[in-house]
Image (cartoon, rainbow, N blue to C red; front, side):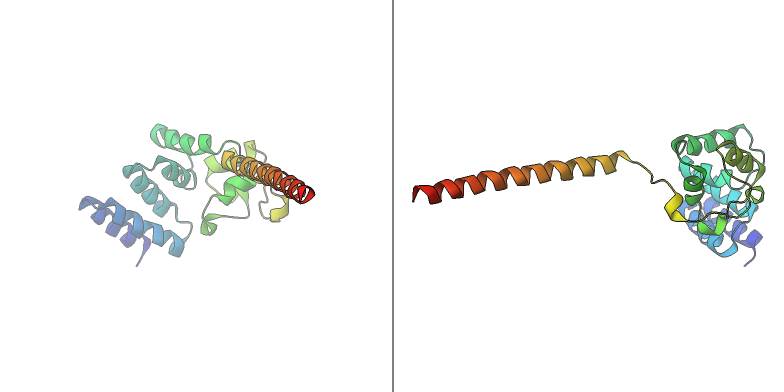
Length: 172
C-alpha cells in the first residue's frame, strides 16, 4: 500500500466516524514508511481531531517547516510540556524511525528550535546514554522520600524491639 492510499484509507475511516481507526492505520504506517511528512501531518491532524493536542504537537513539530497559527499553538503545547528537557531528551521522545543524525534533516521549525536549545549540527556524534541527564520527576522524589521514611520507621521499630528484648532478658 502506498502512502497516499494509506492516507486515503485513514480519511475514509475518519469520514465514517471512526477517527480512532484512522489513528491506528496512520500510526502503524509511520512504523512502516518512516519519515514521510505528508503521513506525519495526516497523523497529527487525526490526533488533533481526537483531542490529543500533546501528541499532535509532537507530530506537527516533526513534519511542518513553517506552521500556521493553529499548528503553531498545538506545537507550543508540546514544547511547553517538555521545556525543561535537553535536546537529547527531547529527541528521545520521538519515535525511533523519526530520529535523524543531522539536525538539518528535521523540518526547518524543529531545526531552529533544536539550535536554540543547544543541539549541534551532528546529532549522532554522542549517543551515549551515560552523558544524558536523567529526567527528574516529582514522582521519583515522592518514592525516594517514602523509602527513606520506611527505612527510618523500620530502624526505629527494630531498636525499640531490641531494647524490649534486652530488658525482658535482663529481668529474667
